[in-house]
Image (cartoon, rainbow, N blue to C red; front, side):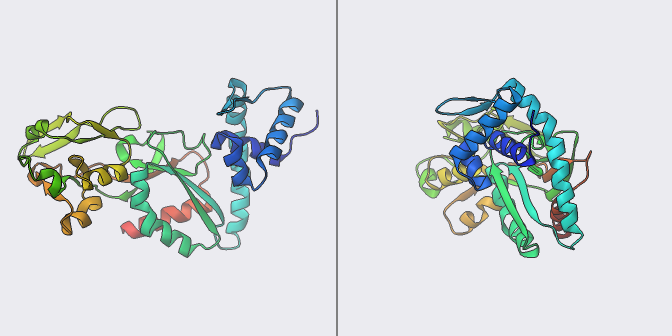
Length: 298
């Protein structure tokens, strides 16, 4: 059988990561039809079906999943060698791929990502935002960003935001004809904007005052999985939101939102962290990003 080229392996891994030929073709800078033919030729040469194709989706077969799992370490090692060569020139280069929830992306986008790109002009950053927790290495990411309690135990975590304070907020229009909630159980008479976690579970709002701590499954007809959408909904008077204080602070200052029940809010949430595997060499591009995070924290 003719030898399989590195370009073919990278093409296969990109299609698997992107979940389709069109998005993978855009990333690789080739036509989607050409990429599809290349993968079909690879499958024919290997006498192995790697993808199940329909008009709506491209999904790895069991054999394709195993093949991807086998080649990812080799591709990562090759990428690392290229990055190390670039590092010898004194500057990181390449693409830093990060996975995180959309709400976390808003925290790190500015100024952290902006400073990173300004400092390293030969670097690119790709952020994929999704609520569900994924295998960042298996999906081809360099690192992920999550709250510490969601970081897998075999990963190294680097705090980006040491603590995240939370706030219950509502718009003046929403509160105009409704009683102001004073204690957590008052929320049971309100429309609350609920949050669905990446695990599929509905988040229970947490409260704390002195030694008293409780979690409340709040009522609400609107459930979202993105903090930005939750903020928009709160601003539009669709219900009370439970969001990061840093996110709502500008809207509280300008009177678009009213902060409620401040005396019942937890002192802090787990820190927002960058996480990555500790079992392999850390590429220069990721090490530079970690150094930037630590320098800002210090």
